[in-house]
Length: 336
Image 1: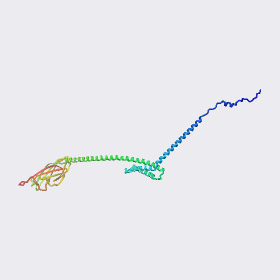
Image 2 (image 1 turned 90 degrees about the vertical axis):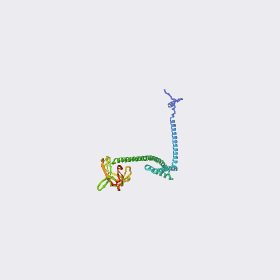
Image 3 (image 1 turned 30 degrees about the horizontal axis):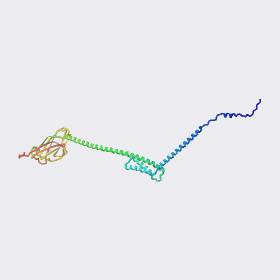
Image 4 (image 1 turned 90 degrees about the horizontal axis):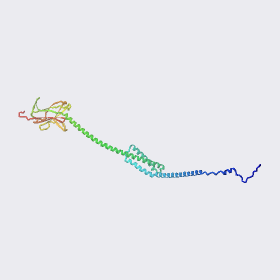
């Protein structure tokens, strides 16, 4: 059996088209748009920030440039320099004796002043040179302030030293006074000691006897009349003394006439009160410590004896150590 194929009045759809018509349409993807918008916003923000930063930097540069221009004004720099220079010069006026480290600092300041002055006095100084001068002025100010501080410190130290020296001078004066007083006391002590020793070592005379002698040829005869007396024989004992050292001792004898005058002065000695006293005769005796020593000597006046009382005083170490008297009478008509 055969079949004939005829075109259909309602032709069937293509299978592919049929499948497509039956699949739902895809949804739209918005992420790409979001990223594009976000990127644009970021770019815009960055651009704004860069613009603002550039603007601020430009304003800052303009401000710095203005300040730099103002600060580098040569006239203003010179005024400030002159002020500092005058301050530095005042250090020299008030401190002529700067030495050592301070002198070195002052020398550095003078060199710096010279360099700055050279630049500021140059009418053709460049901006760079003025900038250097400005920096040097700041350095100069710092150095001057440091030097002033050092000077003030030195003044304080000098003031302290002056006070210390004044105190030392006061102490020295006080010590000198005290030393003088001590020396005076020592001298007085020595003097008193010498007096005590002198007194202790002073000899003492006892058993004093004065005899008037009439001499006929070689024969001596005692007499009591002035007319017959040729000389006095004086005898006495030097008592024992355990303090006086052995050796030659000077014994001074003063003989006073009946009228009280000293008979025949032979010199003088120093009495214990410091006065000078004339004596009639000096006798040197060889004394042995701690032993009694008999002494005798003859004395004859330069003129005839007179009637009356003759006084004999004996001295040693300026002290009177004994005395005696002798009375001479007037001769009777028989010549006795």
